[in-house]
Amino acid sequence: MAGVPTPTLPRIPRWISLRNSLRFAYNPIATLDQYVAEYGPTFEFYLGGMVKGILTTDPGLAQHVLQKEHRKWRKSPIQTERMGYFLGNGLLTSDGDYWLRQRRLIQPGFHRKRLAGLTAIMNQEVDDFLDRRFEPALAAGQPIDMSPMMMELAFRVVAKSLFTTALTEEDLTLLADTVTVVQSFIARTFRQPYLIPWFRFSGQYREHKELSDRFEGVILKYIQGRRSSGERNDDLLQMLLEARYEDTGEGMTDRQLVEESAILFVAGHETTANALSWAWFLLGQHPEVVERLRREHEAVLGGREPAFEDLPKLEYTQQVIDEAMRLFPPAWITDRLCVEDDQYGELPLPKGSRVVAYIWGIHRRPGLWDEPGVFRPERFSRERRKEYHPFAYMPFGGGPRLCIGNNFALMEMQLVLVKMLRRYELEWNPGFEPELQPLITLRPRNGVLMRVRRKGEQTGVEGLNG
Ligand code: HEM
View 1 (cartoon, rainbow, N blue to C red):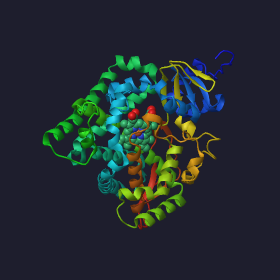
View 2: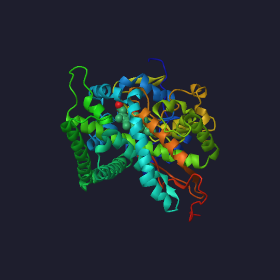
View 3: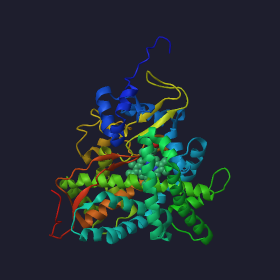
View 4: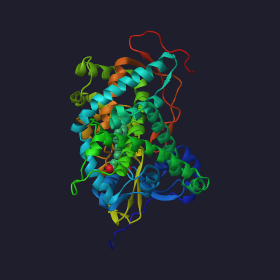
């Protein structure tokens, strides 16, 4: 390195990060976007005024850390220890050799071909949800908030994909409620790390740990039930139960099964629900896109139930989902900690550095994207997608820790769009603007209100706001 000038990154002084910490806690994206505008694509800052990191909207640096040099980088303790304390040591929260062993064990179960068996469960669950939960809400004649609807739907889809029919309504509600409370608490510890001593002192840490223990207790009951009944189902739990380590030929213990199932619940519902909610927000404003979607659904499916083999043919539907996740990436940020000295171009990245890939910023960075704020699904046509840097679009992360549920999520989202557009007209509710709420995932803070009516019915929704 002798003689090579070391580039220095722009640095946001700690006092500025601290001064902005309340604003950051309310909406980190607004603060980070302002930093990017002022300091450029890569700079040093203090996350929540406390934790030093290098934030980047450079897809090359994101790829370097997540993929090319991933051996020198680990998931940060924020993701492993803090989330792991509440959520257990599953794929999302584990690291190192243990993570690799688990990933190798579980990965084949998420292969596209294995997922084919889940299409029937998903189709059934979406229909059921629309009949039992969505229709009664529609009957009230008021605008519908799509956000809690999609949250419940996505939770049910993961729950049924894991445990099929065995799950009772009561347990399902308990699981959904506890996971929501625990997740928002974890998100608070991320955004306001300076409050952690208070959370511990006031007993909030313990209370939330007890809640997550209850959550795990319910999951354990189903795992033990399945083991003892000897029943076989074509679901994710069966896949987890039957998976065998290559070296020992053994399966997972009950504890491991609980931890991995809990992580699938957590990682698999809120992300998908947010992607769908934002997709409705965008579709509500783009009737021409809805028309084109319907034409594709008609051409590929006619009126029949979508089968697994149909999904790759629904190309435009896929493009709409991709574009919705570009504009509103449910996982809007991720970070890695350097465990061995590294270098990106001229930039030294000594051991201990933390790189924060600002996925939201990458997805909206001018220069990477033409008119980045505009909803234009055609960007993701087969020809055009080759034009982009491989990490310019990274809703599922990248490298060896790429989301294991990406195909599951894409399949679910395609099915939901097909089924809902077949049954309903969904329109934007004028005067309503959703606000960003970037917690662990990117939620719409005040929901996504839409006017919905059954297709072919003339009577609209009454009593709209504004
Ligand atoms: C639109 C929906 C989804 C999005 C945007 C999403 C996004 C992501 C991202 C960005 C990561 C990587 C995080 C990092 O590297 O720091 C990830 C990891 C993960 N996701 Fe997803 N996810 C989605 C749906 C799902 C579903 C449906 C499941 C399971 C059923 C799932 C399970 C997981 C797991 C287990 C990991 C950890 C993988 C590992 O580290 O080996 N995700 N997800």
